[in-house]
Image (cartoon, rainbow, N blue to C red):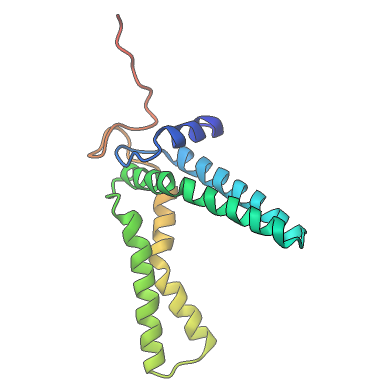
Length: 160
């Protein structure tokens, strides 16, 4: 799927958590959202005008809120494409936060303040998120799976 069809599909399936999304659809949308966010960030970095920065900040926040649900939906569909439940879209970030919090708590109890230990705690804590990035990049299951048809197979229209 190319850039434009991916963006169209993203907004057509605004809050559709069923089915599957291909790697290309997911990553084109990721790129588009990132580019829009960077575009909104650029004036804040270049200009010191507080009024302009407030306005752009509000627009950026509204954009973020506007794409939040469809971005969660496409993430769920991407997990479906590789055969995982969409709940992992919530599970991996929560697991990361819990790991970091637990490891930081243990390091505090043991009185460890060494920077290398803190770095290791963060890497271990964010391992679930690293695994989710792997799943987003992984090729989807070929053919139909329990979540629906392969998003890369062309849809055959019945002859009339």
